[in-house]
Image (spheres, rainbow, N blue to C red):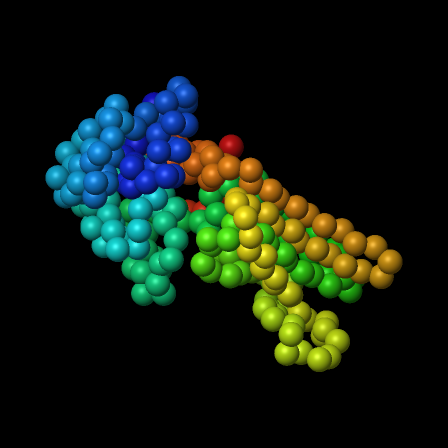
Length: 253
């Protein structure tokens, strides 16, 4: 049984994960952390992480960048592995996470979905064959109208995965409106669509002479991200210090 502390337990994803864990015989949430304690979660909730004295094997974090300092300090002092799911982190905070991983097990991913992380692997294999044969590569993502960043972190992760497969010899084009010229052989195009309540759609397109191959992932609810976070937590519990990735979880599922 994996014992979990849910950081950001009263936020939307915290509640999604709380619901998922209730139905998971291999995990339980033993405590939650949230600035506002206004729900009956069935487990104790602490408004200050420093006051949390409940035993746990791992922390899942779906809070905010402002909470990172206290969270990492808590995990390092208690030697509790942490799955970081919060977005909007600064470059300085990413360095801070890298340093923390030398002292405690840390897993961070741009997207916690098991499907997306499987896709990251599949498109690398496709790129080696198709891009190597001269196919052009494009990433198109769609999200709800309230999403502020574009392209999405997942779209960038997909582009990075393609680029890694090709020896990082490609560059990214985010806006073709100012480019009155044909694409060159080393472009990866990224396009963003915003509208309605689209949870998340990502297409990776390989366009070659007389044929097109498309890899697609569609999230119909945010539960897919919660499921991935729970699987990551079960994987990370008991691991030694280090920087882990969802690819490690996929390999172990």
